Structures are given as C-alpha cells and as structure tokens.
Length: 490
Ligand code: NAD
Image 1 (cartoon, helix red, strand yellow):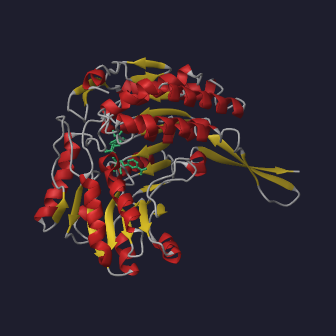
Image 2 (tube, rainbow, N blue to C red):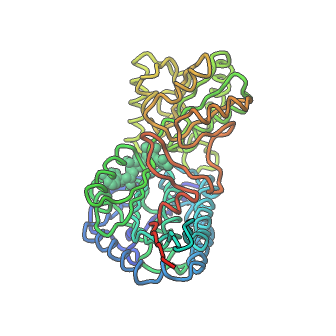
Image 3 (cartoon, protein in one colour):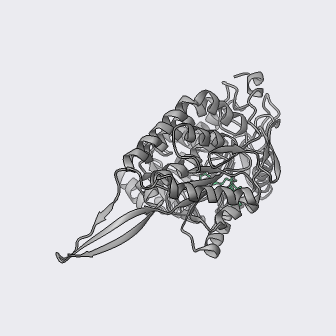
C-alpha cells in the first residue's frame, strides 16, 4: 500500500458509539498521530461525562430490554457468528484503518489480527448455548443447581498494542454470556473498534449492547469503572493502571475485576536446546510488534556454555529486520506507538548503559525511510538481576542477556522479578522441561515455542503483579458470568 493510499484513511469525527449510533464526542479533543510517520491520522473527539453516562445507561437498558440475555442461547450464538463473518468480510477497510494508526503492520493485520478477532468472537459464540451451569451431587431429598447469569454491563478498558485483538478478548466472552459492553479503547488507537461496533449492529446484534466511549484514562476510563450500573470490569494494560482500577472497583462496589497487566517474561535456553530453533524463537519473541506485546520474551537467560553461539544467532536475526512504516510491504518490524513511549524505552536503555551495561547490538532509535518513532532491536548485556532494565517492563524491542551455570540458577533468575505473565523454556530434556513448568512463577509456560496458539482454547493471565483472572478459554467465559445456586427440596 502506498503512502498516498494510506493518506486516504481518514476516520470520521463520530468516534463514540452509543445506543447503536456513531456520535461526535463533546469532551476533550486528542490528536491521534500515525506512529509510522508522526502525521495526524485524525482528531479524536472524546466523550464527556454525560455521554459516558448515556452509554452506560443505554447498555443497561439494551441488556435488559433487547432480550439478548433471555433469547434462545443458539440465537445469540448465531448473531455473534454473523458479526464475526462481517468482520472478516470488512478486512479491506478494517486492516488499513488498524495499520495506519497503530504499530501493527498491514500485512500482519490482514493475515492475523482481523481473522484472529473474528475467530475469537466465534470461539466465544459457541459457549452461548453450551454452558448453563451444573447439577450438584446431593442427597436424594433435594436437587442442587448452579445457574450462570450475566453481570449486566461489562466495562472494558483496552490498551493500544493490539487494538482489535484486545477488544475481541473482552467483547467475545462478555457478549456470549449475555452481557452488554461499554468499551474504552486507548486514546492512542481509538478508531478501529468503532468499526467493530458498526459491524455488530449491521450483523443484527441489538443496538446498545456494544458501546464505545473515547477518552483519557484518568477521566473517562475512571468514570466508566466507577459507573454504578457497571457490573464487572475487564482491563488490559499496565500494572500501575491495573492497581488504580482495582481501587476504583473496591471503592464503588466492590465490583469483580479481571486485570491483564504487564510482564517481564524470561526465555531460558539450556545447553541441550536446539540452538538454531531456540535463537530464532527468542529473537522473534522480542521483535514481534517491536516488542510491544505483554508476553514479549524480554529477558534471555542462557547457559554460559552456549552464550556465544546463541548471541551470534540472535544478533544476526535482529540485523535482518527491515524497520519501517506499517503500510510498507517490506517492513518486518514496525514503529513504537508514540514518541513518548520511545523516550521511555530509550531512557531505560540509556540508564542501563550508564550503569555499566553494554549494547551488543542496537541501543538507539532507528533510522527508517519515514519520520516515525522507530527503535533498533537491542541486546543488553552486563546487567545484574536488580538492574532497572532487568526488573522493569520496557515494552519495546529490548532484550536483556544473563547467563546461568545450572538449572537452579536459571529458575531463580527467571522467577526473580515482580511479574509473572509468561516464560519460555528451550530444552530437549523432557524431565527438565517438566520441572521448569512446575517451578516457573508464570501464568503461562511455553516449551520449545513462544506465543499463544490461535485456537483461543488456553486461558491467558498473569501471576504476581501481572494480573488477576484470565482472558481466553473457558475461564474467560465463566469470568463474565455470575454463578447462582439453587437448592430445591423434593
Ligand atoms: P495503560 O495502563 O497506560 O492504559 C491502558 C488503558 O487504560 C488505556 O485505555 C488507558 O486510557 C486506560 N487508563 C489509564 N488510566 C486509567 C484509569 N485510571 N482508569 C481507567 N482507565 C485508565 O497501558 P498501555 O500503555 O495502553 O498498554 C501497555 C500495557 O498493557 C503494558 O504494560 C502491557 O504489558 C499491558 N498489556 C497486557 C496484556 C495482558 O494480556 N496481560 C496484553 C496487552 C498489553
């Protein structure tokens, strides 16, 4: 796609979606920039507090009055399938819209984000008529049941790193379980989800069931979480914001909350690993979406005897990247979402270097054909376990390197941060792999691979400061249902 073509992508001014209609926000105005070249994508007119209240009110009314939660469950399933079909059919508009305003390359969005978003909705649609509750084992003089019911309105708050996909993780299970949703996307990547909402109405999902409100986190995000009619909150973003949201849920509820938060995930390469395969996986896991992935494998722990060949392979893989605009078909690694985020990355790298660290490759912003925000894939060595760059989430293409002498040391380094989102283990020894799966303090452990499977079956979520609750899988569906107990005397 040429720059000229991408220039034609102009989201409309009506970027809030309330009660089945796109409406112009009456709140603050943000300038949404294209990370690939720093140009204005479009102004964003955020909702004001009255519009937020209207969106929540509309959602509550639609959830009660549209029959969404009480219709034949198969009917709900069919409408969600129709919506997923519409999302896929709209890829010609949805994909460039997403790619123009985010860090996702157009090729990736077409090949993965759009089909994945549709697939995620389809996966959860199937739960609508397949999970009603359970019958308990009781004595014959009574019958004990658990019945699942929707919360009502789910308040969903999403980050900027994969705008469509993160929205689908929230929307799929919440709607399938019979809830309505009010979604606040990130103010950096606000537009593509509005198209999802339009498509939902076109597919026949009742107006008001899926609303989008735009705005900043501290004002509209906080007001959404605190709104009285919000029955459950589902958040993906940083640990710091997660804490603020949990506090708001406690102060105004308590309300149940799912938090998918930050990570600092280790990748352990043992001496017996297939070094070609492991190095390729490690390099990809920190450069995918330019490292702006919650589960980015950002700490390489490698056995001291194989450090050199692994570093050589990773350095080569980093050098092979072509950094550029998301719409350039030659790009293999896109931009950092904003200059502010780039400065955060660069600040952490600079401090690591002044504290005695060494950049084996990278360590600076990257030059690219466009004037956007780009950062070199970076490998940082010479850092101790307590260094800021080893402990803190950088959320960019920066990998720290540490060596270990034995399995105990590897596992202790791996577990030695406050995060616990994911971990990778590379070994050909099955017993060692199983020991590591047990010992690693992480919500997900991948062995001889890194990254989720695309079938949506396996739940994802963090231990420690990486979160509470799960997205994806059966657990995410159940996380959007209340469980009611009935005991009947016979
Ligand atoms: P962020 O926490 O800054 O913002 C996330 C969202 O929260 C945005 O929509 C923002 O406007 C909103 N927000 C901010 N303050 C708020 C408040 N006080 N009340 C309500 N809403 C508020 O995160 P980000 O920079 O957009 O995203 C990057 C972070 O997300 C990283 O830490 C990353 O690890 C994490 N993430 C986690 C997962 C996961 O599954 N665990 C997935 C993707 C991203």
